[in-house]
Image (cartoon, rainbow, N blue to C red; front, side, top):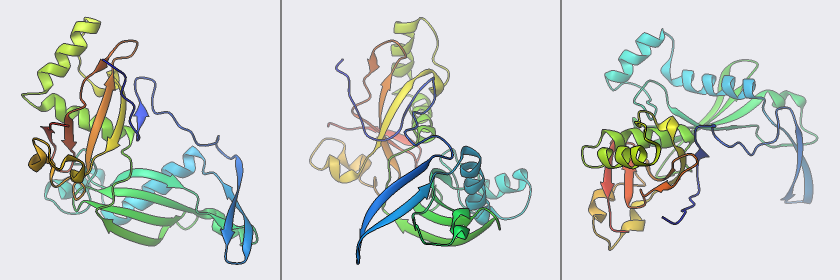
Length: 249
């Protein structure tokens, strides 16, 4: 099978490829402002800062209580949910907001966190302060679908494996090339891209994916490490509904 390249997450047994500069690196960018070219500075978040920013942003909605309490709330349908159905929205991206070079250094404690709430199918952007551990701003948008993360791609594989029609075929393809059983998405190299229902207009199965865009849907490009690609080009995974559909693209 010809190799298929997709935009979005990229990773596999070795983990997700990260193109950001190393922790603590100072990056300088230029932006054209109303008064001409203005220099901005951007200090990248460290891995520890990114994790803390995500925690603050997620906990802002889940509220106080133990992990068990939050899991019970998620099972009842209360609060935000991640791709696996657990409590708290799914983290997509964390970055340092751009600021003018002349701005106060106090803004260095801020981070912008992008989340997806699977309970309401909403993209959330929260600005948090790492010093005060508080959320400073929060914006919610519907119908906006950024590229999926590696964690979401792996959830999509789980949906396929759980499908009685599609799961056996993926397992058989893996076994025929490796002689081993496929038991985890981590055994595969994955690329993925967001899928919108408008892409399927006029093709067989379009009605099955008509809510993609409102729902969080992805397409996968799956490769066995050191081996061939597994053809999933006609499969669309609706992560919001946790079901897969085959369309005639």
